[in-house]
Amino acid sequence: MKWLWSRWPEVEEQIHRSGHTLLFLDYDGTLAPIAPSPKQATLPPATKSVLRSLSQSSRVTTVLISGRSLLELRRLVGLPRLTYVGNHGLEIWREGRRAAVAVQKASREAIRLIRPRLAKLAAAVPGASLEYKGLSVSLHCRLVPGDRVARLKAAFRREVLPLVRPPALTVLNGKKVIEIRPGLNWTKGHAVMRLMKRSRRPSLLPIYIGDDRTDEDAFGALTEGLTIRVGAHRRSKTRYYVRGVREVLQFLEWIRARYA
Image 1 (cartoon, one colour):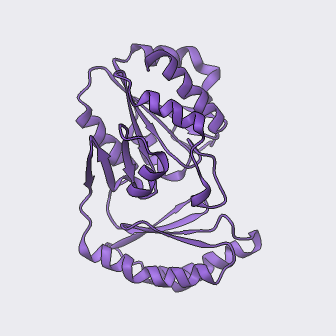
Image 2 (cartoon, one colour; image 1 turned 30 degrees about the horizontal axis):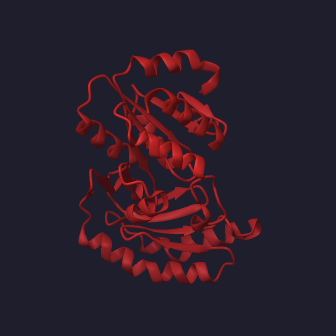
């Protein structure tokens, strides 16, 4: 993995050679700085301005892809001409229409039954919070004091994990969050490949920028694309990394200056 700007001539050439750029952007930790709680992770005005310009470009298609619910992601960004992918790929908003991966009734019912148990667990630990996303539910522990995190995870394993029974449900571990979701073989990588097939653009270059474990599925799927991780990680499947959200904005501003 190389720092993006240290290999800039080859990156710039790859983008210039493409006929169309399909730009996939994670939200938390990529466009918006990581915040103490999900509600506090707001999009900086400068970043929103760049996204607005890119949404009007004929050379770039911009997709926001997140673990947040589709409704919440669209509310946070508020730009109608973008494509939105929520719930780690389970929900897609494209060209004014919502599409969702088929989730069995058993999975929906199991999440509904587990939700109160998770809520009770979160209420018992200072700093823990619950986020219900319709097709999934997340337990956030970013604000949990360091000496209580292990206790919270132990309580989760003891009180909740026995209720997570495949194939209806599965557990997804992210940055300071534990998510319970339908047990489907469907990830951000699958969503990315679906959107690429539907793009039908000549000489298409996919670019994916993300910072979490869940983005690794997309990094692995885009073997011929340009993959960028926010923060270096020796086990990542990406070719390049940037040092933080400011460098993500710098990269997006470069694209806007040339193609928007």
